[in-house]
Length: 111
Length: 113
Image (tube, rainbow over all chains, first blue to last red; front, side):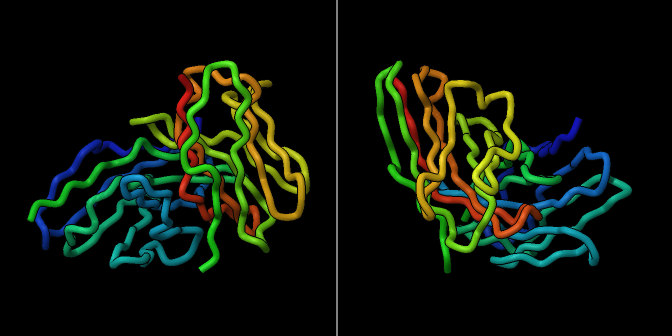
């Protein structure tokens, strides 16, 4: 069955530290892969997407993600976290017509 | 930047009542979706809609749910007889093609008492 797994429910980092949020997918073929961010009371904002080609994709707000087929992973990274990055982050994968979301990782940022 | 607009932002209803959640997708988008997120849980796919018909629906989308595009701009989700477990945030999304670059609205929070 198709699935997207985010192993970390909560992560806390200090402001200025680097960040990596993990995402693993299980699909028959290479899916389209996405990272969305949800701030409290807000909708889902697309950070970045991977369809094909270069496996390192750049997104908004200084985020990037790397697709690794051998590890079935699509981890999200940011070199230096800002307090405003505190939010919930969702990895999602899709075939035709629908997305399957991971359970989300809640990021807290300490000053 | 174009956005998906949802109304109402929050609705409280009594169990058994009908609810209609409204969405205005981005104007040149052709594919429309509803997702829901029960508090503290993951975002779940409900239904996709293209060319005035349902393309795909999940097992959650039972006979109590229906979707409609009543005019050229609105896309609605109707819950015929709400249950307590329908309490959730409902997200509308649209995409220009079926290649799944979805733009989500801010959500409609439904509380069933």
